[in-house]
Image (cartoon, rainbow, N blue to C red; front, top):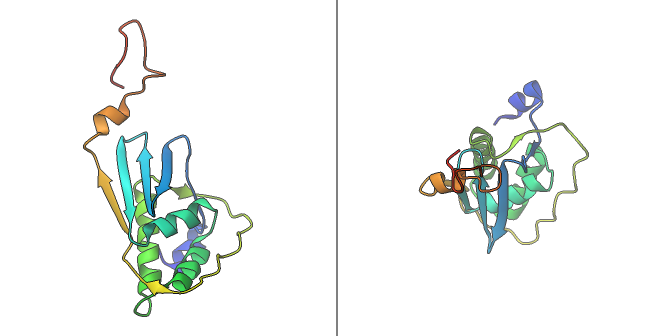
Length: 147
């Protein structure tokens, strides 16, 4: 996502639709489930740090700056890969564009570590099971009922 497009479209900050996406970071890996699609996702490499910054309410520029402070890599790589992952999260419906608000302070970087390309892995093997809604889809025919 380039900065010009951010400025043109007002896309600079994202939010998670908590009605559609549940998420948790476990041992440095972010696990996300999109309840609308039944897909679950794993964020690996530097992606869990990006996700944590998104959830905290940081905008694109703030996330890029924080990632560049945390990681070392060839010039432009961290920014390019961070923006690529943000585009991917948006395309998968895991985040949506949000109105601007006060940006939280960028976390202090501490010591920089080697950059691991952020990866979004998508799994559909449990899609049928995840699309079942036992609370809202129960009727006279019982549970489970396919949505």
